[in-house]
Length: 413
Image (tube, rainbow, N blue to C red; front, side, top):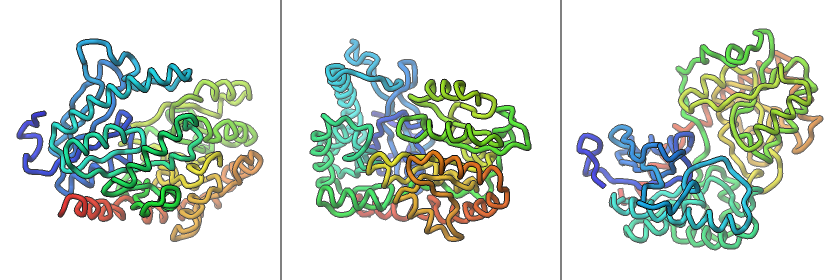
C-alpha cells in the first residue's frame, strides 16, 4: 500500500487499528485516534463498508487513513454478508455460512494490515481478534487488545459459540502486549475470569468542550414540540435489553413529558407500534441518530437524559455507557438504572450525584422518576449543575496521558 507523500510522514510510526463496524459512529475509536495522531502516530483504520458502493480508501488528513472492506475479488465469494446490514436471525447453518464469508473478508484485512508495516496492531473488541492476531504475528509486532465489553456474559452472545470465544479471548489476553477496557468493573472481571493481569482502564468519556453551544435547530424545532413542554431524551441504539419498551410504557403515564428516542436498531418498528397502540404518538417521538460531530449540541437541547439499561447480564452490570457521559457533558440530569458501575461513577461525581437511580426492571419507579423531573424544575436545575461538574471530571483529556504512555511502553518510546 502506497501512502501519498502529502498525506503522511513516511518516518512516522504506523498503527494498524481494526474495528468491526463502519468506524464513522464509533466515538471511542475516534477519540483514541485523535490522541494518537497528536502523539505523532499515523493510524490506518481497517473497518467495514456499509454498502457495496461505498469508498474503499479515504485519506482524512495526514494522520488517518480509513481502509474499508470487503474488497472486490473478481468473484462473489462474500455476497451481501460482507457488508454491514440490519441484524437478522439466522439458523445455525446460516450462521456458519455467514461466519465463513466473514473469515474470507478478514483475510483481506490481514493482508492489508501487514502491508503497511505497522509498529503495533490495535484490535477493538472480540470480533476483530482473529485477523488482528494473525496480522500481528505475520508483521512481527505487538498486539493491543481494546475490549469494549465483558464478552463472557453478554445477553446477545451466541451460547453455542461461547466456548470458542472464551478460548480466543483468553489466548489474546495472555499474548497481547497490553489490554484496554472502559471500566474498572470489566478490568476486575477479566482479570478474575482469565487469571491475567488487570487491564488498563480508558473510560467512554467525551472530549470536554467548554465552547460548545446548544444546537440552533433543537429537538423542539425538529419535532414540533412546544416550548413549554419538558423533553426527556434517550439517545443510542434501539436494541433489546435496554429497557426501551418499559421506558415508552412509563412515559405514557407522564402527560407533561415529551420523550424522544433518537437512534436506530432492531426495535424501531416494535417501538413505533407500541407508541401507536398507547395513543402517545403526539408526545413520544422516534428520530434518526445524529452525526457524532453534532450530537452533543443537540443533546443539550433536552431537559434530561434517560438510560433504562436492563440488569440482564454482567456486561450490563459493569457497563460504562457512552450515553451516560454524553448526558453529563450536555449538562443534563440523568435517570439511570441502578447498576454497580453506573452507581460508582455517579456517586463519585464532584458536586454530588447528578442522577436518579431506579431499580432494574421497575417500571413504576421509572415512571415516578420521569414524573419527578418533568414536574420539578428546581430538581432538574440542581441535577443539571451536578452534571456539568461531573462532565469536567469525566472527560477524555483526563485520560490521554494513559493512552500515550501505554503506546510509549509498547512501541519503545
